[in-house]
Amino acid sequence: MFNQFLLVIQVFFFLIGAYQIILSFFGWYRKKERITHEPTKSFAVLVAAHNEEAVVGALVENLLKMKYPRELFDIFVICDNCTDGTADIVRSYPGVYACERVNPNQRGKGFAIEWMLKELWKHPKQYDGIVMFDADNLVATDFLTYMNEDLCNGYRVVQGYLDTKNPHDSWVSASNGMNYWFCNRLWQLPRYNLGLSNFLGGTGMCFETKLLKEMGWGATSLVEDLEFTIRCIQRNIYPKFNFDARVYDEKPITFRASARQRLRWMQGHFDITRRYMLPTLWQGIKERSWIKIDAAFYIFNAYNFLLGFLITATLWFDLLLPGQPHFDSIYSLAPNWVAVPIALYIYAQVPLSMLLEKVNWKIYLRLVTFPVFFFSWWPITFHAFFTQNNKTWSHTQHTRVIRLEEVQGKQM
Image (cartoon, rainbow, N blue to C red; front, side):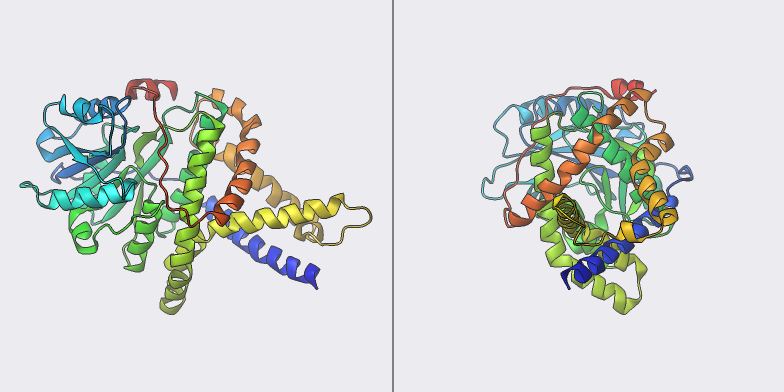
């Protein structure tokens, strides 16, 4: 009886995996974004910062060099509960606003953004769009040009391409880079090509000001980006992915720091799954909206990882027991002409995405250690499930000062 139950569960997850594989095929091609509108939209550029004195200056200098009319954008750095010199550094740049917030009871980027937006609505100057970055980012100088184009074309929420600014620092940062290239190319781009909703990634985001005033921010979970995405989708507002608007994010270089960051993400993801998955799925079924059903599947990824880990561990343990295996694996029952190509393609997706993205050849050497990073998601997800009620935000320390020219030079 348990064997039959386990097989049914495997079939369920196989179908979800098959759906994602089919989706990925639509990320093999892309059309370059076209610029047809002159710069007309004004932007408030928000930078979330908590004790970022080491890196915030590099980002501010980067933003001041944006190839966009300077009178059409202002920079606001949210110095959130800072105890270092972040605010002093920001104030040293003329025309850049250092917005200091002190509230130790409400820590985290979601609370900081909510506070900043309320302050921004009081500002004498109002803006057409709100763009958000993290203090450790670097941004392509044409980013606002692409956001202007998308707002002019009627999009209300836009996510830029999230790249990694330090993939060469360690095997951990390289693995994070591979994860990003895969997600951009074979998760985000296929959904854009098929007219499905894309998902916000926490930075490199643009919002129509009118929408934020209508909805409010209201996303204060550990994964505020995913929470706001789902709130938009439930209101028939579908974020767009702009492949050519590049943002470079600093990734942890040690396994411990990366594991702590990913644990926070998964804790928040379980929280969002519990609160939004079934309502979104039911709404999609009632409205016959595949966009919302796809979003529900996306939210379910936390449990997909968790149950996938438990099923795999059960099957592996069964193989170690003496005698014949007690449980059937769906791959052992499927004909080889089905099982082998699927298994090979699953493992080939990461190098395929790197090939499509024309990644520097040196990073391919890190593919040897990528499986360690990938399989470490399983115990992290398992731990996150039992600690998902932990709402304590943990700060990832950033110290790697890199300039945009260095990042773009290493990609050649």
